[in-house]
Image (tube, rainbow, N blue to C red):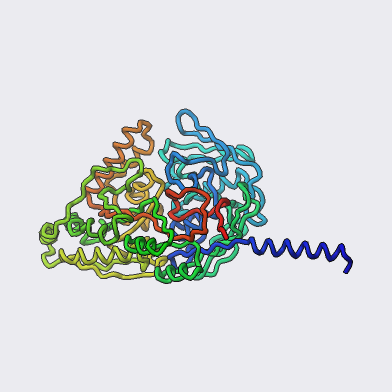
Length: 513
């Protein structure tokens, strides 16, 4: 080997070793058993949403570390304008944005396709967000025009990097068909690489990302349902970031051991939805008895005030339109028993209730089960794997559904998805109206197109008052997000809140040595 070749070989080897040493793999522990459909227009499960935030972009986005609508900023769109009547929105796209793999450059056609797909109730789980979209048109390769049938209060929210706002590759969906659910293609900082169902999702750096190549090379997104197993894996250095246990005593214990624990917004509202179409809950007196039997303060105390807060409103705190002064039925066991007797159940009632095995909901449901039993409301829990439970409750099999959710922080998103009749489960336009509630449709619809901000809030609050009066559900408490991380992990931004409910890993995130 001549000296020049030898010199080049040594340099190449040195570069290769340096690159290998610099390669960064981030290990994340998530509390679900497996991935759902890895399609952002279909799955709204927490475990999937956290991963979607790394793989997809919207026309606009929440500023990293914030879930304040005032912090929405350009994403795939570099600019936009809106007509005076609020009905025509025109977006100018960034030029040269690349999809993952060999799927080419983003154009207006991909945006049009994605939004029409998100609006299609036969394909999308969030189609109700787009009912006011009259036309979506590609004016040219980099311009999208959206015309609304009526102004909506959350326009930028439904176009953000969340749920239906995530933009997919039209070509990839066409080529992959059903396989898109296990091989998603977006434009985000990380690209899908591999899925081992029940074990891990592997993502790799999207080196052509329009904001710059990520500093993390690989993300191993591991599915670990057991909280103690995640704790142990973190203690052993096998995880850099993990979904924590949302209990104050756990947070305090972990922090006392010197760990970094982040507690942040959004507060996921825990609500016990009561199926008003299913006997005996079709009798409002039985629903009132359930509400009187529940002790919110006990639930919050069990979880801990640093991670939970009691609420009586159907819309979470911090959302525009939250009805702060609404009062639910007070905890009163004697009144609960009297109402059951009036309804013809002096010896009490019994229910079989589907519940996920996920700790964040399962533990709270066990506390509720014990509270209800004191009033003669006997609940048998049918515990299911998390994904199976999601399917069961959407199949309307359970008279009660304890559900936790965070949505775009404006009252319309929560009221529409959980309390408008069009969102009732097992209907063609089903979303998450588990209670079959229909008492506030007029107020919800009127608020969407109300241009006077004060009147709009009045309508949202009137809707919440009707929902509470009808006892369609029993709002309980809000549970903040709790994640543990290695001190070597730098998000690249200040974490105050994340709409996808888990820390965003993007091009600015890095692991120090």
